[in-house]
Length: 137
Image (cartoon, rainbow, N blue to C red; front, side, top):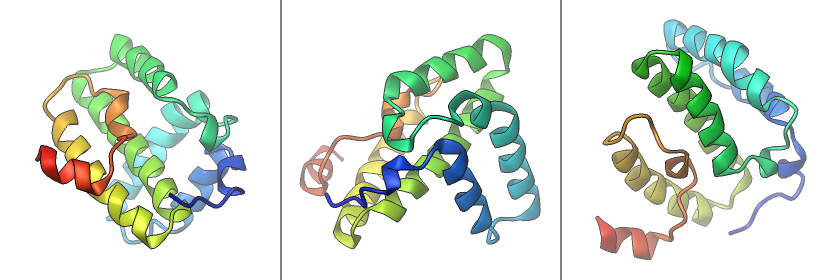
Protein backbone atom coordinates (compact mmCIF):
# COMPACT_ATOMS: atom_id res chain seq x y z
CA UNK A 1 0.00 0.00 0.00
CA UNK A 2 1.32 3.44 -0.91
CA UNK A 3 1.31 6.15 1.74
CA UNK A 4 2.44 9.74 1.49
CA UNK A 5 5.47 9.72 3.81
CA UNK A 6 4.70 13.24 5.00
CA UNK A 7 1.24 12.22 6.14
CA UNK A 8 2.50 10.20 9.12
CA UNK A 9 4.43 13.23 10.37
CA UNK A 10 1.20 15.10 11.09
CA UNK A 11 0.14 15.08 14.70
CA UNK A 12 -3.31 13.88 15.65
CA UNK A 13 -4.27 17.48 16.54
CA UNK A 14 -3.08 18.75 13.14
CA UNK A 15 -4.99 16.03 11.34
CA UNK A 16 -8.16 16.82 13.35
CA UNK A 17 -7.99 20.42 12.13
CA UNK A 18 -7.74 19.23 8.51
CA UNK A 19 -10.50 16.66 9.05
CA UNK A 20 -12.90 19.21 10.53
CA UNK A 21 -12.17 21.71 7.77
CA UNK A 22 -13.70 19.34 5.21
CA UNK A 23 -16.48 17.88 7.38
CA UNK A 24 -19.03 20.41 6.17
CA UNK A 25 -21.16 17.64 4.68
CA UNK A 26 -22.13 16.44 8.16
CA UNK A 27 -25.34 17.53 9.82
CA UNK A 28 -24.85 20.43 12.23
CA UNK A 29 -25.63 18.30 15.28
CA UNK A 30 -23.23 15.56 14.19
CA UNK A 31 -20.46 18.05 13.50
CA UNK A 32 -21.04 19.70 16.88
CA UNK A 33 -20.90 16.33 18.63
CA UNK A 34 -17.72 15.36 16.78
CA UNK A 35 -16.06 18.68 17.66
CA UNK A 36 -16.97 18.23 21.34
CA UNK A 37 -15.73 14.63 21.48
CA UNK A 38 -12.49 15.63 19.78
CA UNK A 39 -11.92 18.69 21.97
CA UNK A 40 -12.85 17.06 25.31
CA UNK A 41 -11.63 13.48 24.92
CA UNK A 42 -9.50 12.69 21.89
CA UNK A 43 -7.22 15.67 21.24
CA UNK A 44 -6.14 15.73 24.92
CA UNK A 45 -5.35 12.01 24.67
CA UNK A 46 -3.67 11.87 21.25
CA UNK A 47 -3.04 15.51 20.24
CA UNK A 48 0.77 15.70 20.15
CA UNK A 49 1.26 12.14 18.87
CA UNK A 50 2.19 11.62 15.22
CA UNK A 51 -0.60 9.82 13.37
CA UNK A 52 1.80 7.07 12.32
CA UNK A 53 2.80 6.50 15.95
CA UNK A 54 -0.70 5.83 17.31
CA UNK A 55 -0.87 2.09 17.95
CA UNK A 56 -3.87 -0.13 18.70
CA UNK A 57 -2.72 -0.42 22.32
CA UNK A 58 -2.73 3.39 22.62
CA UNK A 59 -6.32 3.43 21.40
CA UNK A 60 -7.31 0.60 23.73
CA UNK A 61 -5.77 2.46 26.68
CA UNK A 62 -7.84 5.57 25.92
CA UNK A 63 -11.00 3.49 25.40
CA UNK A 64 -10.40 1.74 28.73
CA UNK A 65 -9.92 5.10 30.49
CA UNK A 66 -13.17 6.40 28.99
CA UNK A 67 -15.00 3.18 29.91
CA UNK A 68 -13.98 3.63 33.55
CA UNK A 69 -15.75 7.00 33.78
CA UNK A 70 -18.31 7.26 30.98
CA UNK A 71 -21.48 5.42 30.00
CA UNK A 72 -20.97 2.58 27.49
CA UNK A 73 -22.99 4.40 24.81
CA UNK A 74 -20.78 7.47 25.21
CA UNK A 75 -17.64 5.35 24.89
CA UNK A 76 -19.00 3.77 21.69
CA UNK A 77 -19.85 7.21 20.29
CA UNK A 78 -16.42 8.61 21.15
CA UNK A 79 -14.73 5.57 19.65
CA UNK A 80 -16.82 6.01 16.50
CA UNK A 81 -15.58 9.58 16.18
CA UNK A 82 -11.98 8.39 16.59
CA UNK A 83 -12.50 5.70 13.94
CA UNK A 84 -13.95 8.25 11.51
CA UNK A 85 -10.98 10.57 11.99
CA UNK A 86 -8.42 7.77 11.62
CA UNK A 87 -10.22 6.20 8.65
CA UNK A 88 -10.21 9.59 6.92
CA UNK A 89 -6.45 9.77 7.48
CA UNK A 90 -6.03 6.35 5.85
CA UNK A 91 -8.24 7.40 2.94
CA UNK A 92 -6.31 10.63 2.49
CA UNK A 93 -2.91 8.95 2.51
CA UNK A 94 -3.50 5.88 0.36
CA UNK A 95 -3.66 5.23 -3.35
CA UNK A 96 -7.09 4.56 -4.91
CA UNK A 97 -6.37 0.81 -4.87
CA UNK A 98 -5.36 0.94 -1.21
CA UNK A 99 -8.49 2.93 -0.36
CA UNK A 100 -10.70 0.28 -1.91
CA UNK A 101 -8.87 -2.45 -0.01
CA UNK A 102 -9.03 -0.54 3.29
CA UNK A 103 -12.74 0.24 2.81
CA UNK A 104 -13.59 -3.41 2.38
CA UNK A 105 -11.53 -4.41 5.40
CA UNK A 106 -12.95 -1.54 7.43
CA UNK A 107 -16.51 -2.70 6.69
CA UNK A 108 -15.70 -6.16 8.04
CA UNK A 109 -14.04 -4.64 11.10
CA UNK A 110 -17.08 -2.44 11.73
CA UNK A 111 -19.35 -5.47 11.78
CA UNK A 112 -17.06 -7.13 14.34
CA UNK A 113 -16.73 -3.99 16.48
CA UNK A 114 -20.49 -3.44 16.75
CA UNK A 115 -20.88 -6.89 18.29
CA UNK A 116 -18.63 -6.11 21.26
CA UNK A 117 -18.78 -3.71 24.19
CA UNK A 118 -16.59 -1.75 24.73
CA UNK A 119 -15.20 -1.50 21.22
CA UNK A 120 -11.86 -3.08 20.49
CA UNK A 121 -9.12 -0.85 19.14
CA UNK A 122 -8.04 -3.59 16.75
CA UNK A 123 -11.19 -2.98 14.71
CA UNK A 124 -9.93 0.48 13.81
CA UNK A 125 -6.79 -0.90 12.17
CA UNK A 126 -7.78 -4.02 10.21
CA UNK A 127 -4.91 -6.03 8.83
CA UNK A 128 -6.32 -7.69 5.78
CA UNK A 129 -6.39 -7.50 2.02
CA UNK A 130 -9.54 -7.45 -0.06
CA UNK A 131 -8.97 -11.01 -1.24
CA UNK A 132 -8.70 -12.42 2.29
CA UNK A 133 -11.48 -10.20 3.66
CA UNK A 134 -13.89 -11.43 1.00
CA UNK A 135 -13.31 -15.03 1.98
CA UNK A 136 -14.07 -14.31 5.65
CA UNK A 137 -17.47 -12.66 5.08
